[in-house]
Amino acid sequence: MPNRDKFTEELVALVGKGNVLLEDFEGYATDWRKKFFGKPLLVVRPGNVEEVSAVIKLCARSNIKVVPQGGNTGLCGGATPDQTGEQIILVLSRLNRVREINTANNTMTVEAGCILQSLQEVASTHN
Image 1 (cartoon, rainbow, N blue to C red):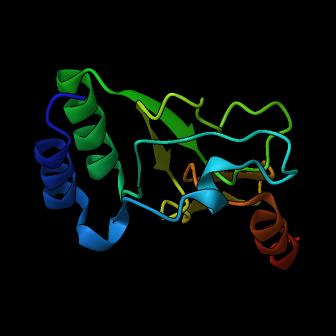
Image 2 (tube, rainbow, N blue to C red):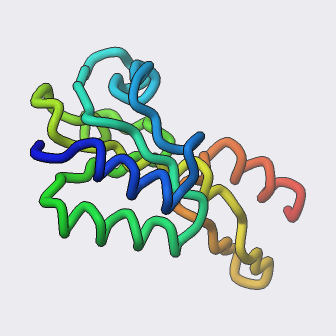
Image 3 (cartoon, rainbow, N blue to C red):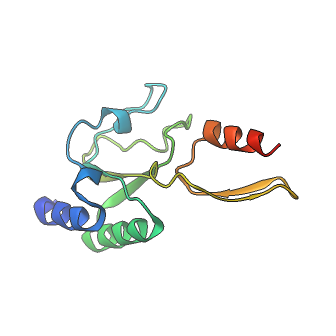
Protein backbone atom coordinates (compact mmCIF):
# COMPACT_ATOMS: atom_id res chain seq x y z
CA MET A 1 0.00 0.00 0.00
CA PRO A 2 1.53 3.31 -1.07
CA ASN A 3 0.52 5.50 1.91
CA ARG A 4 -0.71 3.42 4.82
CA ASP A 5 -0.06 6.19 7.36
CA LYS A 6 -2.29 8.69 5.54
CA PHE A 7 -5.03 6.06 5.14
CA THR A 8 -4.80 5.20 8.85
CA GLU A 9 -4.94 8.88 9.85
CA GLU A 10 -8.07 9.34 7.77
CA LEU A 11 -9.68 6.29 9.40
CA VAL A 12 -8.83 7.60 12.87
CA ALA A 13 -10.44 10.94 11.96
CA LEU A 14 -13.61 9.08 10.94
CA VAL A 15 -14.05 6.61 13.82
CA GLY A 16 -11.64 7.64 16.60
CA LYS A 17 -8.22 6.36 17.56
CA GLY A 18 -9.50 3.57 19.81
CA ASN A 19 -11.51 2.11 16.95
CA VAL A 20 -8.63 1.59 14.52
CA LEU A 21 -6.48 -1.36 15.50
CA LEU A 22 -3.02 -1.71 13.99
CA GLU A 23 -2.00 -4.83 15.93
CA ASP A 24 -3.36 -7.65 18.12
CA PHE A 25 -5.73 -8.86 15.41
CA GLU A 26 -6.10 -12.49 16.46
CA GLY A 27 -9.64 -12.15 17.80
CA TYR A 28 -10.66 -10.64 14.49
CA ALA A 29 -8.36 -12.41 12.02
CA THR A 30 -9.39 -15.91 13.12
CA ASP A 31 -12.88 -17.39 12.93
CA TRP A 32 -14.46 -18.63 16.15
CA ARG A 33 -13.75 -22.29 15.29
CA LYS A 34 -10.05 -21.48 14.76
CA LYS A 35 -10.26 -23.02 11.30
CA PHE A 36 -9.63 -19.93 9.14
CA PHE A 37 -6.74 -17.50 9.72
CA GLY A 38 -6.07 -14.20 7.98
CA LYS A 39 -3.69 -11.28 8.06
CA PRO A 40 -5.50 -7.92 7.90
CA LEU A 41 -3.93 -4.58 7.10
CA LEU A 42 -5.85 -3.24 10.11
CA VAL A 43 -9.16 -3.50 11.92
CA VAL A 44 -11.69 -0.67 12.03
CA ARG A 45 -14.74 -0.57 14.31
CA PRO A 46 -17.27 2.07 13.23
CA GLY A 47 -20.00 3.01 15.69
CA ASN A 48 -22.87 3.98 13.42
CA VAL A 49 -24.14 3.79 9.85
CA GLU A 50 -22.62 7.15 8.91
CA GLU A 51 -19.17 5.95 10.00
CA VAL A 52 -19.59 2.70 8.06
CA SER A 53 -20.48 4.70 4.96
CA ALA A 54 -17.49 7.04 5.40
CA VAL A 55 -15.09 4.10 5.92
CA ILE A 56 -16.39 2.33 2.81
CA LYS A 57 -16.02 5.51 0.74
CA LEU A 58 -12.45 5.99 1.99
CA CYS A 59 -11.59 2.37 1.17
CA ALA A 60 -13.07 2.73 -2.32
CA ARG A 61 -11.02 5.89 -2.98
CA SER A 62 -7.91 4.17 -1.61
CA ASN A 63 -8.52 0.88 -3.46
CA ILE A 64 -8.53 -1.08 -0.19
CA LYS A 65 -10.56 -4.27 0.04
CA VAL A 66 -12.98 -4.66 2.96
CA VAL A 67 -13.94 -7.80 4.85
CA PRO A 68 -17.10 -7.11 6.89
CA GLN A 69 -17.43 -8.92 10.17
CA GLY A 70 -20.52 -9.14 12.37
CA GLY A 71 -20.35 -11.60 15.22
CA ASN A 72 -17.58 -13.62 13.53
CA THR A 73 -19.58 -16.79 14.09
CA GLY A 74 -19.97 -17.91 10.48
CA LEU A 75 -18.94 -21.41 9.50
CA CYS A 76 -17.41 -20.75 6.05
CA GLY A 77 -14.63 -18.23 6.74
CA GLY A 78 -16.35 -15.37 4.90
CA ALA A 79 -15.56 -12.90 7.71
CA THR A 80 -11.85 -13.77 7.74
CA PRO A 81 -9.37 -11.89 5.52
CA ASP A 82 -6.84 -13.66 3.37
CA GLN A 83 -3.10 -13.78 4.09
CA THR A 84 -2.05 -10.85 1.86
CA GLY A 85 -2.26 -8.15 4.55
CA GLU A 86 -4.03 -5.91 2.03
CA GLN A 87 -7.59 -6.06 3.38
CA ILE A 88 -9.15 -4.30 6.33
CA ILE A 89 -11.64 -5.96 8.64
CA LEU A 90 -14.75 -3.82 9.13
CA VAL A 91 -16.02 -4.96 12.53
CA LEU A 92 -19.71 -4.22 13.04
CA SER A 93 -19.95 -5.25 16.71
CA ARG A 94 -20.53 -1.64 17.86
CA LEU A 95 -23.68 -1.54 15.71
CA ASN A 96 -25.58 -3.72 18.15
CA ARG A 97 -28.82 -1.94 18.87
CA VAL A 98 -32.34 -3.27 18.54
CA ARG A 99 -34.14 -0.60 16.53
CA GLU A 100 -37.68 -1.91 16.74
CA ILE A 101 -39.63 -4.80 18.20
CA ASN A 102 -42.97 -5.63 16.61
CA THR A 103 -44.80 -8.18 18.74
CA ALA A 104 -47.81 -8.19 16.40
CA ASN A 105 -45.83 -9.89 13.63
CA ASN A 106 -42.98 -11.36 15.73
CA THR A 107 -40.20 -9.32 14.12
CA MET A 108 -37.29 -7.17 15.23
CA THR A 109 -35.33 -4.61 13.29
CA VAL A 110 -31.72 -4.77 14.45
CA GLU A 111 -28.32 -3.42 13.50
CA ALA A 112 -25.73 -5.55 11.70
CA GLY A 113 -23.53 -6.22 14.74
CA CYS A 114 -26.21 -7.85 16.88
CA ILE A 115 -25.39 -11.28 18.21
CA LEU A 116 -28.09 -13.93 17.94
CA GLN A 117 -27.91 -14.87 21.63
CA SER A 118 -28.58 -11.27 22.65
CA LEU A 119 -31.50 -11.06 20.24
CA GLN A 120 -32.95 -14.29 21.61
CA GLU A 121 -32.78 -12.80 25.11
CA VAL A 122 -34.54 -9.61 23.97
CA ALA A 123 -37.18 -11.67 22.14
CA SER A 124 -37.84 -13.78 25.23
CA THR A 125 -38.62 -10.67 27.29
CA HIS A 126 -41.31 -9.78 24.71
CA ASN A 127 -42.70 -13.32 24.34
